[in-house]
Amino acid sequence: MTHQPHRPIKVLFVEDSEDDARLALRALKRAGFDPGHRRVQDAQALLGALRDERWDAVISDFSMPGFTGIDALNVFRTTGLDVPFIFVSGTIGEETAVTAMKAGASDYVMKLDLRRLGPALERELQQATIRAERRQAEIDLRKYEAQLRHAQKMESIGTLAGGIAHDFNNILGAILGNTALAREELGDHHPALVNIEEIHKAGLRARDLVRQILAFSRNQPQELRIQSLQPIIEETHKLLHATLPARVVLEVAVCDTPLYARADATQVQQVLMNLCTNAWHALPDGVGRIGVGLDAVRLDADGAAALGGLVPGRYAHLWVSDTGVGMDAATRARIFEPFFTTKPVGQGTGLGLSVVHGIVTAHAGGIAVDSRPGDGSTFHLYLPACTPVAPADARPAHEGEVRRGQGEHVLYVDDDETMVLVASRLLQRAGYQVSTQSDARAAIEFVRAQPKAFDLIVTDFNMPGCTGLEVARAVAAIRPGLPVIISSGHLTDDLRSEASAIGVRSLLEKENTFVELCPLVAHVLGEG
Image (cartoon, rainbow, N blue to C red; front, side):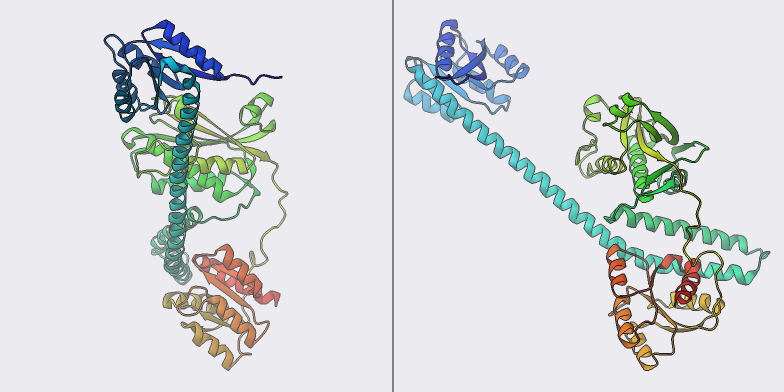
């Protein structure tokens, strides 16, 4: 017959009699426990023991010289511990026992009947476990509720960003389109060209900022391709200059030799933006230096293993450093946990660094942190280096030399009057006959009335009462094969998928109308 192993347990005895403590230990062993123990007999020793060690149970005598069981119970309750507290006494009466239970004791056992001690402790340990599991479940529930609220907030931000992008890109399209037309009309040496060029540059910066808002607020699929990392850092540098206050000095150190990696440019830029934003928040009083760098390194077996089991070899090493407050070891150990943050309530979600870690891992890379309190922090990112692709001509067919129009008839549909004016002037200058409509349903009827009059239709996507997709479906029913291009200030994956399914020939980012409209029209007509 095999004996069940005894269950280890740590018991703190509050008892002035060593013999009585031994009797209780013997009863616990007979009940199947393997108790480790410590005995104390005054308030100071009890409080010290409770703070210094972890205990599974406290067993206290009720009557001791100068220190009662109720005193011990009161000291125990100040610690907030949730472990069984059981009185073992030879003098406690029923009325006193009831008072002790009301004061917070788990149970009481008479010294004359210690056979009850083991079962009583087992029951109370089970109850403590149930309470601990319930508390953990409540903590998990609050965490998941917070995650749900954050997901809903991000969804709302994404919807809002899409709406803002559409309206703002209408404005940007008009600004950039008109500056392009003005430059052509003024000639190369007109003094106003300097001012127009500044307007053009400001418009491009605004366009890039809108793209960043969209990239950070929507869940877009990862698009990995071999590309140089230097342009990503340069673009991030421009965005940071528009974000960081003047009291923050931003330093960039990038190696001269181009470094290539298989990367999603938007995600790498998001990583750098997140790290630099965190670095800014870590600066005392918002004043200090932030460094962004890139160089090539070769990781040996030990270095690769230290970064989470990477493969030894060539890596692109990016880093973000700051002169901020730094972190201690306990904080460094948790910074990549979702929802962990050292910022005050309401000033951070705790998601920034977990997103950074996820993106770097998805790039088959690694991340390391150097930081000490008062010495700032440096985040090191390692992405596998790649050989650049052979310089084949991978440009779309509509780039390069653009074929001028030969009088083909283009119908341009947009509810924004400024965009209609700019687009029609651009197309007319490129050699096309242009008709315009500012109402989508009127445009459909316009095509229905003369279906063979048009060679191509360019329509906005987001219009009152009728979308560009509905225009494309109606046109396909009226005259199958008539090419349609949809323009939008917010191209989503859903829009791309639906447009492809109904035969839309191409999509145009509205803020790029001044550059891409005419080449795209020429390309689509050339295909036809």
